[in-house]
Length: 159
Image 1 (tube, rainbow, N blue to C red):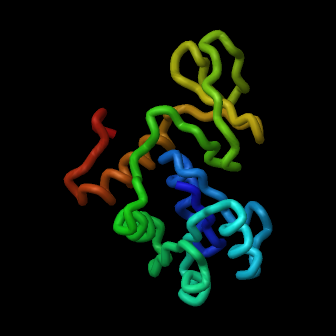
Image 2 (tube, rainbow, N blue to C red; image 1 turned 90 degrees about the horizontal axis):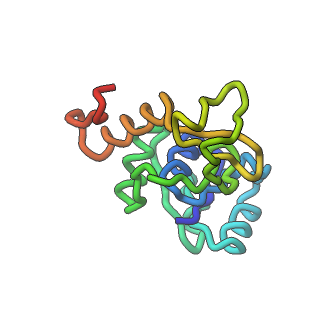
C-alpha cells in the first residue's frame, strides 16, 4: 500500500515500512496543513491515515484511527485490511522510506552494523542507513504477532 500518515500517527510509521508499505510520514516532509496533506495524498495516490475525523472525511481514500496507543493503532490498521506481516525482503527504509538494497556478503559495513557475511544487511539508497534483522526486528515481530493472534503469539526462537 501507498500510505501518508499525518503527524498524529507517527508511532506506526516504521512498522508499516517494515511490512513493505510505501509510507510517507507528514512530519518528515513538514506537512501540517490539511490542504497540503490532501494535495500530497492525491498527487501521490496515497491512502491518508489520520486521527482527524474532518480530514479523513475530506480525503479521497483514508483510514481513520481512533486510538493514541501504537499497538491499538496497529490493530485498527489490521481491521482496515492493511497487511501487517514483516517483509521477507524489506523494500523501504524504516528511517526515511527510501529504497533498500541488499548488500553483498563481502561488502564492508559501518561500525554499528554486523558483518554481512553473518547476516543479511540492507542499505538505504537515500539516507545511507544500514538495516538487518536484529533485536528491533524481533520486537516488531512480537508486537505484530500480538496484534494478529492475541497473547498466544510469540516469536519462533522464543524471544
